[in-house]
Image (tube, rainbow, N blue to C red; front, side, top):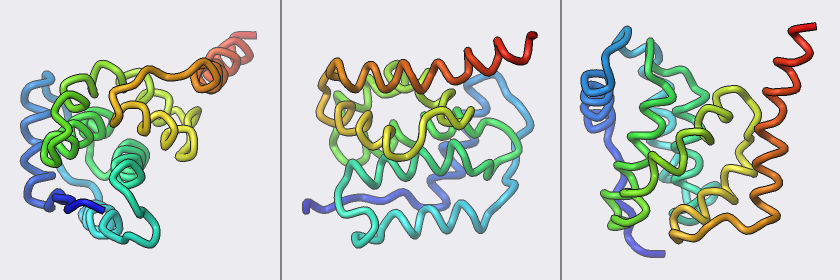
Length: 155
């Protein structure tokens, strides 16, 4: 495995502050410092996350679903994912990350996309490849969960 540059707690707070500032604000502040530190530490465990893609997937999933900040958890998942790609020399993937992942992040937060599906998505994102037809269908079915739930709640 090539050398991976990890994100520190201080970098995370810096990225978070800039994200909230540039995206129009919100209720800034850390809600779960221990949770943030735990993710940043655990991502370095090669037994659980043996390669870059699995580490990126874990980072994004946990920051999106972990509610570590008072506001901006989906935004920080996007920006930290982009930053992690950039910091590790995946410049083209980083340049495309926010646009490709915005809807995916929403559906992670809504519990429609789980960590296994996200790992498949991240493999394509890191390799700068389009999703194959099978993966597109899986993503569509996952995203439909929200539409079905919304429809059922309107009745």
